[in-house]
Image (cartoon, rainbow, N blue to C red):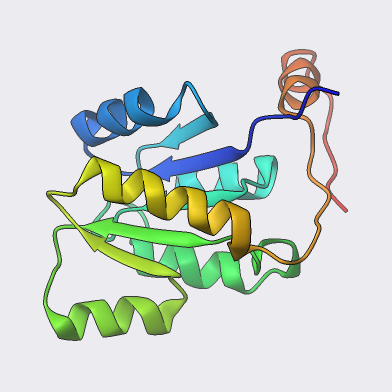
Length: 151
């Protein structure tokens, strides 16, 4: 039996960070990306990732607003969130965790620590089994202009 790859959503407005994270994670995980908070929220709803890595300072919607929006919806409450940001003061970290992040990491980051954190969160972070759409099916349906409903 082939296990589906875990799905990770990366939301960051820095294309270099997205490229680095994709390079680090694509071999082991299915990686989705968004360049601003609003696009990140849309992809989170549409693809129901197993984990999200989110920057805080972004256009259209901050990482704080994105996480707040995600946590309001039952189907996304159990998604582990890693804030990966340049904002590194203790007050900012405390605020980020209060907003709903599972882990708060600062840039520049240690890629080994990030990969280990992701593995731990994916293994132990979400205790609730959730149903999510198959990404290939969603892409196929989108390409034929059908509406996709999530329950």
